[in-house]
Length: 145
Image (tube, rainbow, N blue to C red):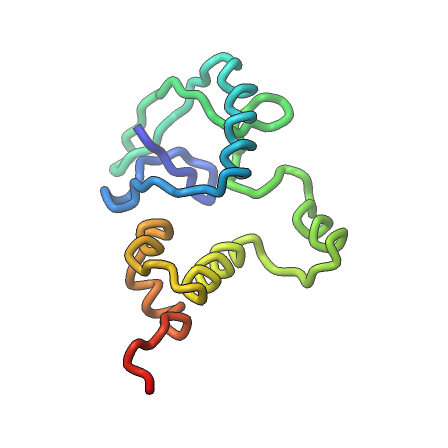
């Protein structure tokens, strides 16, 4: 079963069937994830509470790819558990501060600018309406003169 982590750190099933999707990653990203899996899947399984609608719960036995330094699940879906780590990374790279969520916007707009298939991109991001609304200006207009 696939699960999401909400902003309060609760493990929940996806909201809709459309929420379950396969994300394509660059080969280097896959290499990193596979190395991480080699480390974390050797750890004992975790018993975690899954929260369903109507205050129903169940205990699921799971492996997580990413664990804290104490080999515990992250409490919240943060990019890092180190305070101000994102800010420090940006300062070290001499980049203007942007929230991590902007990575999604950068990916979407760059894919559209290079002519990526819109249906594929909607599958990656999970929301066709959002692509039209927010990124419509990056979609090439085939009717232009």
